[in-house]
Length: 215
Ligand code: SF4
Ligand code: SF4
Image 1 (cartoon, rainbow, N blue to C red):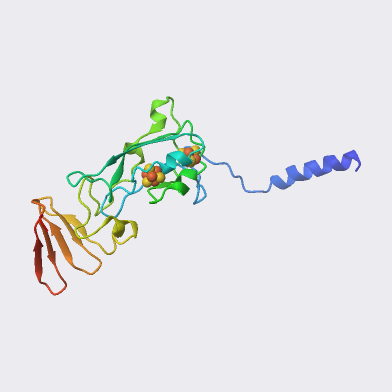
Image 2: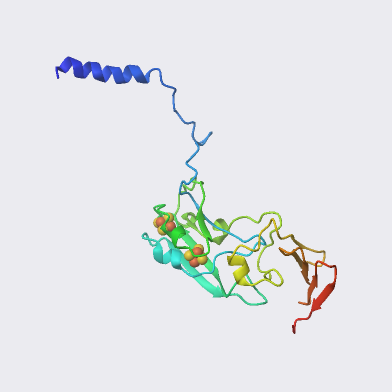
């Protein structure tokens, strides 16, 4: 092709761009939108009553190709429960100096405890502040959730949590003035555990049942 045609083709690109809408983004005053599935900061999710979904299994840490995740699990007890079932994540850290945002960790998580948000503003000027712990990663408490530790919903098992039977739509959770948790289950029955650990249930016919800590 003659050289002057190359030059014309080059000018055509410049000329065409002159009439396009500018795409300058005014960051950081007006941060641009990212794709809905953008891999941003991680989040440790909760169940509808506030219990943590993380069971401290470390599968996310083993899946991470950058060795960016550190997990230490611990046992739940009846007196101190942070998640349904046996274990919870006592220590959970993600090192964002190492993380490459690949998302393999969230694929590995068996309880969907770990997901990624669209938040990408994580720059900092020192190493310590880029290692995020549970204080930064745990999802905030939403209305109807309570800060763990607290018992599982009365009458429920860990399986009910894993199967999604504890939902905000179907379960009304609140604490009374004595700080006792109240739950309405999927059948509309009201469950209350008082501060002495005695379980109270009112069934759908309005009949009251009481079960002591000895069953
Ligand atoms: S997104 Fe990838 S690199 Fe980052 S913590 Fe998860 S597995 Fe590791
Ligand atoms: S975030 Fe998921 S995979 Fe990682 S320790 Fe917790 S439950 Fe296991």
